[in-house]
Image (cartoon, rainbow, N blue to C red; front, side, top):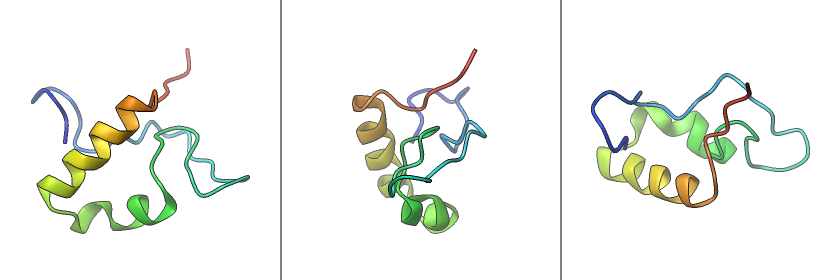
Length: 62
């Protein structure tokens, strides 16, 4: 889950691409995490946020 209330609920940056693997190159979530995001609990979302931030996501171009 976002670290600050001003951050969006979703890490999506509208750069969706899972062409070569199961990880979106824009937000760092797996295909399953993207598809299940709306039904995840706040704790599950928080765990995803922690992991993707540690991996350098979400990546915003520009």
